[in-house]
Image 1 (spheres, rainbow, N blue to C red):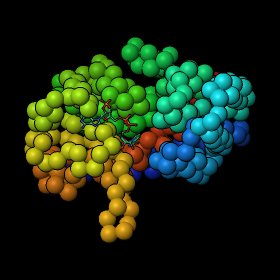
Image 2: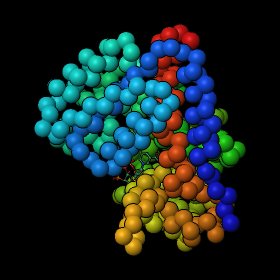
Image 3: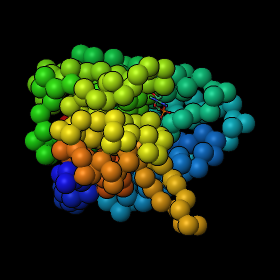
Length: 287
Ligand SMILES: NC(=O)c1ccc[n+]([C@@H]2O[C@H](COP(=O)([O-])OP(=O)(O)OC[C@H]3O[C@@H](n4cnc5c(N)ncnc54)[C@H](OP(=O)(O)O)[C@@H]3O)[C@@H](O)[C@H]2O)c1
């Protein structure tokens, strides 16, 4: 049976560390969460962020713009609110509805408060490995690899995603020298032909496609390590469940190691975002 790469206990440790740090300060650390439109999965993520951040003692400020909002209105809101002394971070939830110019909205976020690492400045910094923040989900993947002492050096790592929140930044992180980098990175996406040929030769497979049972056991080799970022809601016998992209039960009997869903990568994403928030506070205060 595969080693289960679980993220929950690491997330718990990170939470405890943050709690201790927060106990020593009197300032209120507020941050903005902006959602545009009413996407159901985004609402789930937003609620998780609000709940977890409040529990730890942060102050989330949530603003939901309707799809009818004007782009300028959203941009002005971000520009004005982030000037506040007590606001140390800004998150603008993805996906932003297609009618908006996402880049224009994201560009209005101050790079020092861009907790998701989405501004062109911060994404460009990833190329230099001179970051202000690492993006939360790619960082969660690296954290898990580090925690289980899984080396990426010289390994063929297949990233099935080219999204701006997972695939692209993760690829840059895996290409860094040292630090769970030095990987031979292969990227696949919806236009990739013969995906199975790539999954078969990969030592580590990161899947972030958003399709249940997308990665099956006959696609992978026995020694492979599977990192599943997918969060998919499926219905079975009238009940709703969250599953990843991987056919977990089948793969569990075949591969060397695999992340569960839930409790794997996803368990670390929110806490990584909140670590970025605290980092922003520390920088501003010169701590
Ligand atoms: N664990 C976490 O903390 C976390 C955080 C964020 C998101 N997620 C989850 O991760 C998944 C992806 O999220 P996202 O926002 O990155 O989604 P996204 O922007 O839609 O990206 C999905 C990626 O999968 C690729 N893809 C789709 N069908 C494919 C196929 N048949 N073969 C190969 N590649 C295919 C897409 O290719 P194209 O670029 O060609 O379309 C795209 O690059 C979702 O389930 C989401 O809920 C998890």
